[in-house]
Structures are given as structure tokens and as C-alpha cells.
Image (cartoon, rainbow over all chains, first blue to last red; front, side):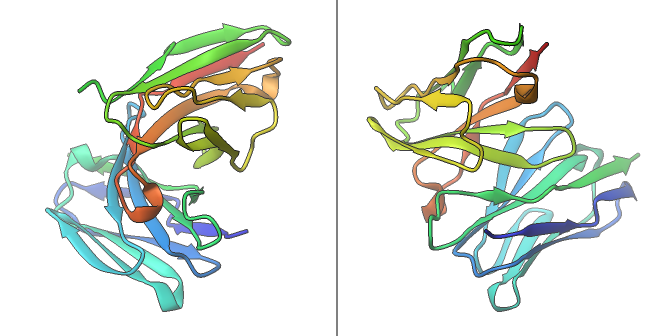
Amino acid sequence: GIQVEQSPPDLILQEGANSTLRCNFSDSVNNLQWFHQNPWGQLINLFYIPSGTKQNGRLSATTVATERYSLLYISSSQTTDSGVYFCAVSNAGNNRKLIWGLGTSLAVNP
Amino acid sequence: NAGVTQTPKFQVLKTGQSMTLQCAQDMNHEYMSWYRQDPGMGLRLIHYSVGAGITDQGEVPNGYNVSRSTTEDFPLRLLSAAPSQTSVYFCASSLDPGGGFRQYFGPGTRLTVT
């Protein structure tokens, strides 16, 4: 099945810094989503982005499907950005079965 | 809207006991799913449903049963709990995650099996 690798596994930032999180996947996908899990465990969908670029406020994401990676950009980070960021993918075999990476744990210090 | 609700929030079971984790959504979503999350790991899909009366297995279905008799409810049953099922369980719903619709997650159920 598809393998999903995220990097870096851990990241510590000072408030106001920018960061880039990466998601590599081992096979072609037709569904790629980014999620944020806050320190209290709540999961929030950030982006559905099987290809191209999207932006939502200080967050943006780019997926280069032909090269099998996706990037999540966080600009001007805030302490509320802390938590774990997950990438999840599925392929045409069953686009409802999401396979998740292990996540990038982000801590933003004031 | 209450969104996706899960009960209980916490549960301790002894090995061999059975129990049902409840999940309900009030958004009229066809797609519902159950995940488990273990420390330092991403979520793994247990079972999912694309509508009332239709369920399918995910990545780690062994030891769990599901049914979907209504659009709103998707309970997860542990038939004979084992310590390996100690985990945090999340329920999610969506119009269609494969079509790019957002998934909404419940707050999770933290289960410990001793």
C-alpha cells in the first residue's frame, strides 16, 4: 500500500517564524489532505489538495503530484499553531481509505 | 449543530469485556468512519461506512464490529477487549472525503484495557 512520510518529525519555532512541513508519498494519489491536531487532541481538516496550491490565511499548501510530495507552509507562526500536523492520502483504488503519516509535532514558543 | 459527538470520553475495560463506542452526527453526512490513534502515530482506519446499511473494513478491522442502521449513528463494538486495543478512538464524518469534502472529527474516546 501507499507509504506516507512526513518531515521533520519535530519542530520548535519562535512566534513569528515561518516553517515548511513536508509530506512524501510512495504512489500516485487522487486525494491528499492536511490536518491539524491541537494539544487537546481535536482534529481539524486544513486542506484538501491532491494537486496545485491553496491558501487559507497564514497557511498554504502545495502538492506536486508528479513528484509525489506536498508542502504545508506556516507563516508568521503563533502559539495557537502548536500541535501535530498530519498528511493523509488515498489513491484511485479507494479514495475513501485515507492512509496517514506519523505527523510533524510543532511547538511555537512565545 | 452539535457536529460529531462521541461517548464515552474515557473508558477502562478489563480484558475480555465487550463494549460499544457511540458516534453520532447531525450534519446528514453519508460517510462515517472510525480511527484509532496510538502514541506517536497517525490515525489508522478501522471501519467506514458510505451510507446506512453499507460498511467496509479499513486498515485495522480485526477485533471490531460496526453497523450503520441510520445516517446519524455509527457505533463501534469491541467484542472481547484486549490490551492491544488500548488507544484513542476517533469518529469522523463527511459528505465524501474522496470528493474533497471536509472531514469532521469527534472529540475522541480514550480507552484503556487492563
